Amino acid sequence: MPKSYNNYHECFLGSGAVFFSLTPKKVSFLSDSNTELIETYLQIRDNLDQVINSLKKLKNTEIDYYNIRAKKYRTPHTRAAKFIYLNRCSFNGIYRVNNRGTYNVPYGKRSNVDILTLPNLKQVSLALKKTIIKSCDFNESIDSINEGDLVFLDPPYTIAHENNGFIEYNQKLFSWDDQLALKEFCMRINELGAYFILTNAYHKSILDLYEGLGEKAKVSRLSQVGGRNKTRRTYNELVVYNTRN
Image (cartoon, rainbow, N blue to C red; front, side, top):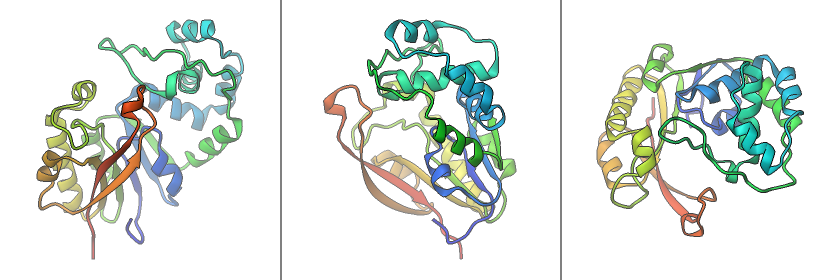
C-alpha cells in the first residue's frame, strides 16, 4: 500500500473486501462487469429500506430457494434482494452461472442463516455513499484514473495456481487475451503516475507476463470455497504492484 493516495478505484469489485477494509476518505470508483452485482450495490446505497423490506419476505427453505432462484423479479430493489438472498442461502455463497448466464448454484441446506444481516447492510450502505458505481469492463475505467490515485485489481484467475492449463470455467469469463489486456491496463496506470495493486495466480505464465513491470510478492491463502475437500487447501498467489517516489 502507498503511504497516501488520492481517489480509489476497484475494477473487479466482487465482494468489495479491500474497499470496505480501506474505507477510503476521498471518492471511490467501483466497477464490475457483473450487472446484477452492481445493481445490488446501487440499491443498497440508494434504496436500502426497500431492499430490506423485500428481504424480510424471503424464506430460507429448499422449496422457497429454488422458487426464488427461478423467479424473474421486475424492480431493482427486489432483484437486489434476490441477489443477496441467493448469496446467503446457496451452497458456500458461490456465484456461478451456466453458459446461458443463468445462476445455477444449489441450495446450501443451512437452517440458521441470517438473510438480513441488518447491521452489515446499514454499514455497507453508509460506506458506499461517497462512491461512483457502474457496470463496465475494466478498460473503461481508465478515463477516471488520475495521477496519485490507487487502483486495486483482482481479476478472475485464468490460470490454475502453480498448475498447467486453464481454469475451464474462468477461461470463458476471462481469457488469456483478457489477461494480456489487463497487463496493458496496468502499464497505462503506471504511465499516468497512479498506483496499482494486482492479484493473480502464482504461475510461470503470469510471472513472465509481468516481467519488468512493478514489484512482485508471493503470498499464501487458505481457500474454503471449493465444493470438494481436495480443493480446500492453501494456494500461493502473486501480488504485482508499482511504487512511486
